[in-house]
Image (cartoon, rainbow, N blue to C red; front, side, top):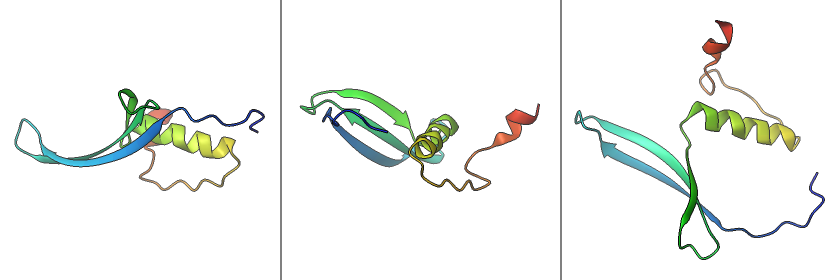
Length: 82
């Protein structure tokens, strides 16, 4: 699938956090950050709990020929039945 030689473009980091929201409730989250080669700026960030992020990761795995097993809570497909 990859015809060109892979090229290093930067670093990635996963950050899990726990914080209080404005209502005083404790929330948990997980973000993925992509940094440039020199680690001097964040190129992009993703909310790893977002359904769109999860769907794109499944598509990437399918494109690479990996087996994907969906669990019922991974994607809420109730919007597709409207």
